[in-house]
Length: 345
Image (tube, rainbow, N blue to C red; front, top):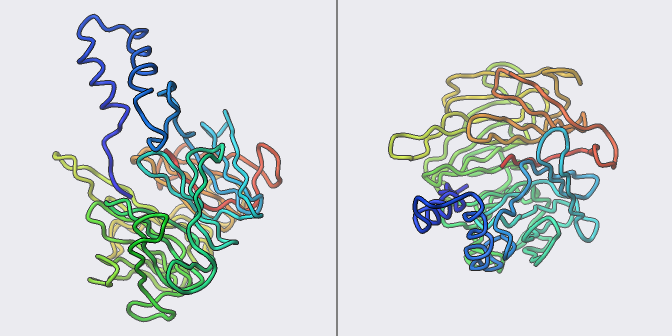
């Protein structure tokens, strides 16, 4: 996913400069809400006149309840929901620089873009099938540095890219199999600052990295099993980054929801260096049941969809420090039914 300088920070700095040393909190708030906020258009993802209108800190694809859930913390504070149309089932999602939400509807084989969790300005991409701008049981979405959509088209055993929601520039890569340039139900995608694409090839129990959608520098890690360097039907992948003195993002770790082994795996790179695991089968502390997705937030919090336990878990790191869990099975406000995609913002 592209790396961005926070718009809010830039705007505050500009306002402080304009106001000078006489700036007060009240005057700054008025300026941001009335002047700067009203200058943003609808595509910026903010409500005009209300600049401080951000997405919740945590977003969850509550798959079998057919909804996207947002909340500020693992107490469930300020919970909001968006129900997918047409009986859809969200399997993953991503947000862009304008804080629009791109939801992968695995059941209907489409991508749905909405401006916010009220569902405003819905736009749909894709139809069921295996042709151009068609999808089959997609599971995950991310963006490259040009904000082009990259989707794990899982049922078609390929990765697809589109410039936008109109389908311009449609490109696909991969065929069914276990060899080079082949996938078996790819379930998760991520990109680094060099626009390399990391793909969780679930059915082949491996991680794949390519430089581009021509498959350049095809590199893999992992085999089927439960030992070191092995995975079992993994479903979720995320990247953790360090930043050099110039602010460039460098991959610090690759983290995987090793679903069939009921654990989280971290490696430094695709050589498998720094192999570390967290978890075992169960429903207690440091235990998981078929974890399906995960999201690292700037190196300080790891969120995990503990799919089989119908809960969300937060830990500080791969050591499992400060383990917290929220949720139980059901359709209520503190409940989930087979949650999958998760993003911490």
